Length: 88
Image (tube, rainbow, N blue to C red):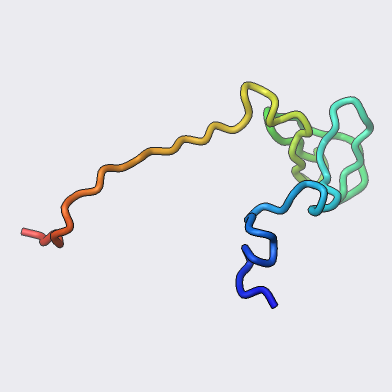
């Protein structure tokens, strides 16, 4: 039996696309029915589409391709001395 989630998923936090199953997304050139109410009226934003009736939000299928996708910034912070800090 796996002792951690990482071992159960094969060493990856996010499972591979082929093992995740079906994901509901808003597809631009198709009729998109709302999974909440079944209607087809949407407010389209930059990365999400929102149902005009029940406000269910879906990610856009092509959102990661617009303007380079998500921006991930990693900052390496300096490590200060190992002495404990005391308030004055």
